[in-house]
Image (cartoon, rainbow, N blue to C red):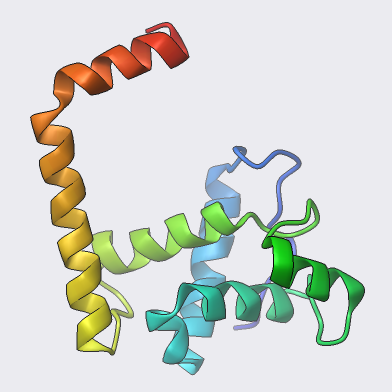
Amino acid sequence: MGISTSTHSSLPCEMDKTTHTIIIQNLRNIMSEHQRARNNDLFLLFTYWELTGCAKENDEYYMISKRMAFTPMFTQPSSILRARRHLQNTLGELLPTDPYVARRRKIREEQFRKFYAENKELIKQYEEYVYGI
């Protein structure tokens, strides 16, 4: 299985099921070959972009992306990281190999869950303000 190069959407928030499936498969390939990608999100992002043909060493876009972590032609960082979280947290695949990273991610997840459980009214007000719900 190879890396698919057609994973970017026209808008950052767009991601259909096919795109998500392609990103997940690309992540499986990368994280199987590069254990460092399981523990380091920046390494994962730049490896993903490089292997999908979006960025190459000494390429102008690559250098810009290292500073900005975003260009329209790339699969969005949020899409890649959301798919990585789904792969590791929901599917339980290709978990971090560094115990410190695994523990830190688990602690953050627990902190977010606790915050959202304790602040339901605040979150509801925010959603009403932002989304008009």
